Image (cartoon, rainbow, N blue to C red; front, side, top):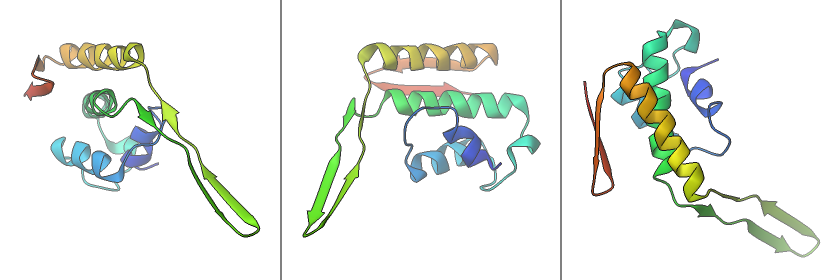
Length: 114
């Protein structure tokens, strides 16, 4: 499985391609890399970055409906609570702390110091 697939498997909702791309680039992982070849530290820190991204996304994505004549299509939505977002931040911060990354939050922005 690629690192992109690995990261998507860590969360229960859809993640934008560009979000995954930025996370793996920031962690200096080559796109399409087999996740088994990425060291545990890097995978866990990329996962923490993904959790932070998820915690910063809108709380609700609506379901969209399309219909034309005799056919209908529905794309599902999702909703996350403040509790869910807080849990994601806590999980991310535990990973950052495990590897000694300094994480500071102010004004809604998160800074990671390597």
